[in-house]
Amino acid sequence: MKVKNFITDNFLLHNQFAEELYHGYAASMPIIDYHCHLPPAEIAKDHIFENLTKIWIEGDHYKWRAMRAFGIDENYITGSAPDREKLRKWAKTVPYTLRNPLYHWTHLELKRYFGIDDLLNEKTADRIFDEATDKLQSPEFSCQNLIKNRNVEVVCTTEDPLDCLEHHKKLAKSDFGVKVSTAFRPDKALFISKPEYLDYLEKLSDVSGVTIDSFKSLCDALSLRLDYFGENGCSLSDHGLSYIPYQTFTDQEVENIFQKRKENKVLAPDESEKFQTAVLLFLCEQYSNRDWVQQFHLGALRNNNSKMTRLLGPDTGWDSIGDYRQAEGLSRFLNALDERNVLAKTILYNLNPSDNEVIATMTGNFNDGRIKGKMQFGSGWWFLDQKDGMTKQLNALSNMGLISCFIGMLTDSRSFLSYPRHEYFRRVLCNLFGEEMKNGEIPQDFDLVGGIVQDICYRNAKEYFKF
Image (cartoon, rainbow, N blue to C red; front, side):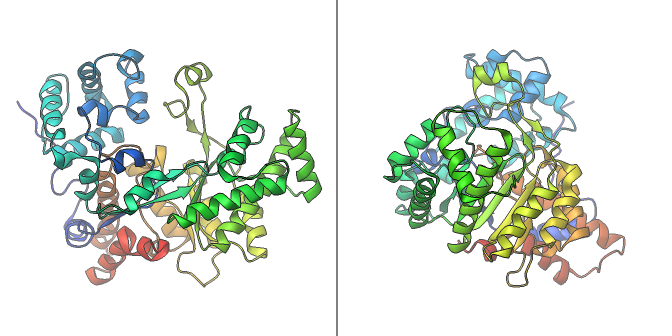
C-alpha cells in the first residue's frame, strides 16, 4: 500500500481553533529571518544547486548526526561518495528518524519546495532524487527565488568583523526585493586563550588599519569595524558563548593580560574571563550607542569529539548541550550595562531546557518600560528548535513574562530549504493557543488571540528590529 505524506493542511493543528488561528492569521504573515547562517555569496550570485544532495545534505550536521547514529559510513556523509549514493543513505535513515524533528522537517521540505507527497525511504529515494534534482535546474529554484517564494521579507546572515561584506553590498544594489542584512559576530576577538588568537589580531589589524598593540587599540579596531558594518546596513550583533563571563577588573589588569598573551604566555582561566568581560562590556556599550540589537546564544558544549573535529573541522556535528551555570554571571553582566544606561535591546537564546525559567525570569529584570519587549527570551534554537523544545520555551516565556511581546522564530540555518521551519513554529504556536481556547483557558476571541499570533509571527519583529 502506498503511504501518502502526513503533512496535511492541518498538520500539528489539533482542533478548529488552532486551524482558524493558523490558516486565518499566521500562515500569510511575511517572514523576518533575523538570524541565520545562509552563505551570502550564494544569495548574491543567485546560485542554482546541482542536485538534491548538494542543497539538502551538504553542510547539514543535523542529518549527519542521524546518519552516523544509524550506522552510515562517513564516506556517505561528509566523504567522497557520489551524491546519489549519499541521498540513498539519507533515505535509508529517514524512516528510522521517526519522532525526531528531522522526520517532520524532511517531509515538510519535500512537500513545500518540490510538491512531493511520498515518504522518503530506500524505495522512493531515486525517484525523489531525480524529481527534485530536475526541478532544481529551473530558475524558479535559484537561491533568491527559494527565499522569495517562501514570503521572506528580511534575511540576516552572520559575519565576522574581518568580512568585507562584498556580497551584501552587491545585494543592496540589486533588484532582489528581499532585504539581506548581516549581524556582527566578533567572538574571535574575545577568545584570547585560543591558539589562533594572535593570528586573528594580525588579520583584524590589516582590515581595520589599526596596529593592535594594546587593549585600547583592539577596541579602536573593533569600533572601526562596527562603523563599517553599520555603514553597510548592519544593526545587529551576535555572540555564541557557553555562558556570559563576568569578572571585575581594572584597566591595568586588562592591559597586562593582553600584553601577556602578546608575549605568547599562557593565561590563567580568571585572566581570560577578565579580558572577555572587558571586551564584551566595550562591545555592548558600542551596540547601545548605535541603537543595535545584541544577541547571545548560550549553552553549547562544542567540539566534544576531538578526533573527528581535527578531521572535519568545527560545525560538523560534534556539539551538544552544556550544563553551565548561567544565572549569576549573566545577571552581573546585564546589571553592569544597565547601571551605565548602555543596555541595548537584547535577545538571550538558551540551549539547555533546564535553564528556560532562568532565562525567562532574567529578561524581566532589565525591562525598563521604554521599549516593548526590550529584553527577549529567544526562540528555541539548535537542539531545541522542534515541537517539544518550542513548546517548553513558549510556556516558560508565557508563565514568566509576556508571550505577546515575543519576536518569534528564526531559522539559524545554513540551508536554503529551511524556511518551512517558520511554518512549523507557527503551527506549534497556533496549536498551543488553540488548545487553550478549546479548553476555555483563554477567551475564544479571534481578534484578540489571532492578533497576538500575528504579532509573534511578524509584527513584533518588524517593530523591534526596524530593518
